[in-house]
Length: 195
Image: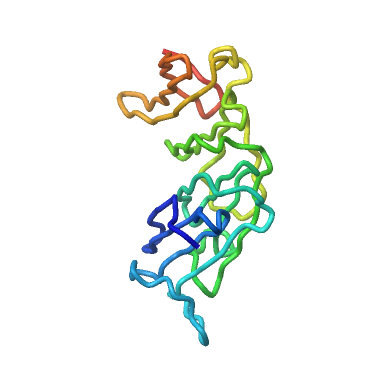
């Protein structure tokens, strides 16, 4: 399988993903036992190791990030998740579901950011920023483009997106031309205010 290129901790499990020879695969260790990734040969316990992938995703996993009760999986195909298959129920080896949650093409290089119950993702064009509620529901979710009115700010293309906390929570965008943009995202009207 080769070494993983993505590592994360989710619900007391160590997560490896985007292996050289299995770019869509996601492996989760046993619960609270980070060194055991062996799948059970007989009885599957809720704490057993997990191996999975989102079948609808055909491209390499480019990012992992934690939701309230689900592990989000980003690739150029869109946004998928591993979860229990039920709303607000922790993931276990006996209750697991993998699915594509949105087909919006996303950046293969820019990591999503979670801030104030919203997850921000950059589109495959590296110029559009999308937002989704940091939800725990299993339904398909729309990714709302946040910056339709300010797309010209991102004409140079986004190179990196960061989160910064202060009096107001800011998103910081480093553009390909070296410009730094500081933006406050307003949840109520899905817009940015630049500073």
